Length: 316
Image (cartoon, rainbow, N blue to C red; front, side, top):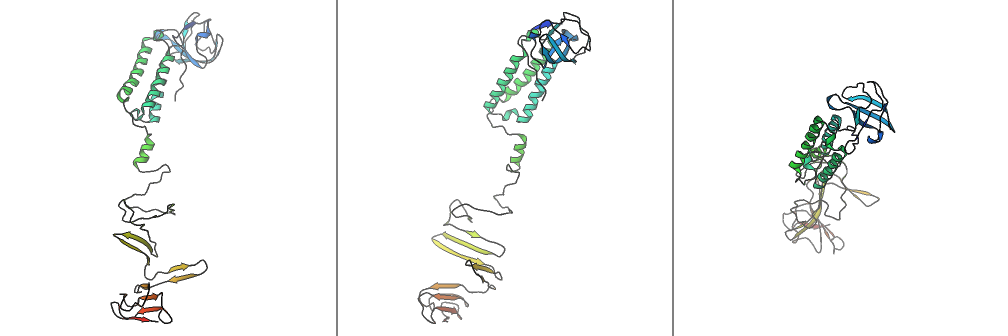
């Protein structure tokens, strides 16, 4: 952003105490107190031939390290020529450029909140009070100042009632691309994949299928490449629980010391547990196994050896 130099109310003037050439870097004034502290601008002379200078140091009535012809043409001036902190073309250009820069950094002005707009209006009004009385300005300076103020006023008039929260262009792009603050695209709720580990810190159900806004009795469902399915469903007055695994896949059962494997080729019968003999009671396919919890010797384990209904069970 361009440097903006402090103005002084009413733009009081002083005069050159001594004549200067067009290359002098030190200038003596009659009353240096009428100019703002360094660094700052001052205008020597009046009208179209005036010269704007930039002084880096001010010691009493002496200006040192002066940049001659900062605007306008450096030239020789005689004793008694007027010197004042007038509003310059540089002030106008810096004022306009800095506002445009701030507008780009903050986003479009229509996206500012009411409070942000109010703060910006206060800042502009404060800046205008520092410019000084317009009576000390030339016709061109007044025209430039009016043009700059009108440009800003038009933007505020058009958007002053807009209360929407501003977001910067880069933020808007990120949200439009559905990216979070880390730059990662979030998972698509309609179907997507993810890599890495997933931890669910929740007391169940952690994963729910067929979700329609109502949890159906803690329906859990997990699956992997070896396909051990765990599920627990309670819907339509029916509670079911169990696990499944694909044929020709080993599933380990681990008690903390020993691994025991379960394997089947796809035609294994189900396992049943119950009271009493299954014969004539439990319908199953050939190969099913039944554990009788109240059995005795040779009547605890049954195997379905034949039949398609509830007969064909043999105790082992």
